[in-house]
Image 1 (cartoon, rainbow, N blue to C red):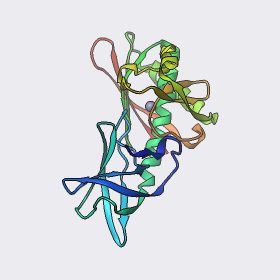
Image 2 (image 1 turned 180 degrees about the vertical axis):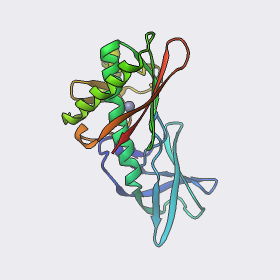
Image 3 (image 1 turned 135 degrees about the horizontal axis):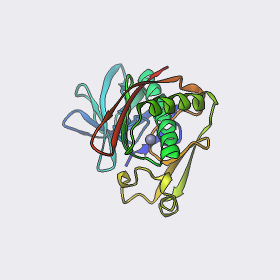
Length: 236
Ligand SMILES: [Zn+2]
């Protein structure tokens, strides 16, 4: 298993690592990594691995059997190679801003309505949250987005800590996507944003909501009886 560096330092942009395995000439596992794998609604990091003078583009990062695998654009890497890795920071930082913002907006909607969040998809250009809410009111959702913006401007601190799984599960609001948690994880990483949201979460976040910018409501859809889908973007 590789050491996962982004969990305790989301701002790490470059690091040195050793290649542990290479499958099909392009799927690379490292002894440690700060590349975020596609998971939990947050897209994967892009970037490069550099060996000597040769650059390998990282085009996809996924998690397979619990281990992080990096897909590179051409063959040439071998187990034992030392590589210097650089994350595409522009992309990743936008996704960090988007991730923290999505917690603020879904925390606010949950606190106001009791709605459960059933899914989310972050993106550099567009974000989506799905939640269960019977009475749908477009004006209300626009108001929640405006209130989320007020919260962002307050400069709420984002903190991370670890907690035994059993303890965290006692508080259902802390594990909104409880069924998405792998059952074999004993210790959960808990991300708190001021008093607005506290969640078990494996994603990368900014340190303070003042780093985010403004959310802009795009549209809302009904996806079935109790399922609302809201699209918004971030003006960074
Ligand atoms: Zn999250």
